[in-house]
Length: 294
Image (cartoon, rainbow, N blue to C red; front, top):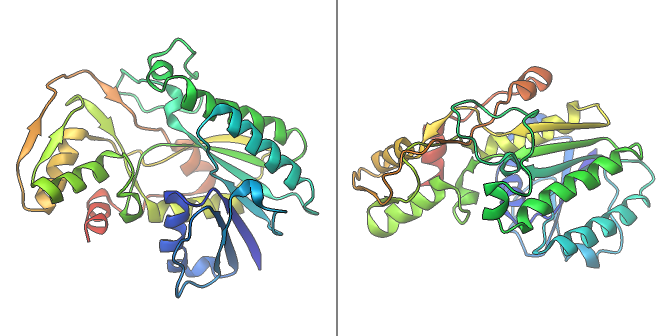
């Protein structure tokens, strides 16, 4: 039985694996080990185990064939330190595992055209609005880690970079994605406040699809290094999303706090992922919202 090790599993990705991994019979010959700073309830979960420890305190990596690296710290300097610790632990393993790093689509910057973002879009410079908006830190963290993993691929490790877009599901209700914000808002105050532009477009992949896709990619990717957009390509405006969520609650009060119509189209092209890895979206946005508000 092969093992997938998730490093940095205390955030929503680790929780998503706990919630949905056992729903896939086709993965029953795979074990999941999650390194997390916090306890995660895995009662009645098969082939799932949690190592509750800070990654830097871990003596060595457990034997594994696949590694999902989701680790993120609060500073660029600490990110680099953690990566170097990871690199040292990695070389001790007898067999080189396949590695997936979860980067971000935010690296592409603002998209003022109604065109889906492709992987060959040039990453925005340090002068870009997105760089300034994230106060340099988060932008540099992801960009630097991508470079570190690229360098690791030169040492004969198979590396896949996933530029993650937007997600939805019950494990994400504490995240800052619009569906989570709207659901919490309507539960609390029976209304949804829209602060962004009415012409903002996003797309949301359900966490169950996310789990299935990540595992499938481990099985299927063969290149020494590649970059893939990762998320749904089904665009929806923030206003239409609010209406859809309000309808599920039988509430109709949507308050527009910003009447700007500036176009912001943060939607990935996933043609490369669909064509090369035969992946498809199984959970519709409507069902994803239902699952999130249970």
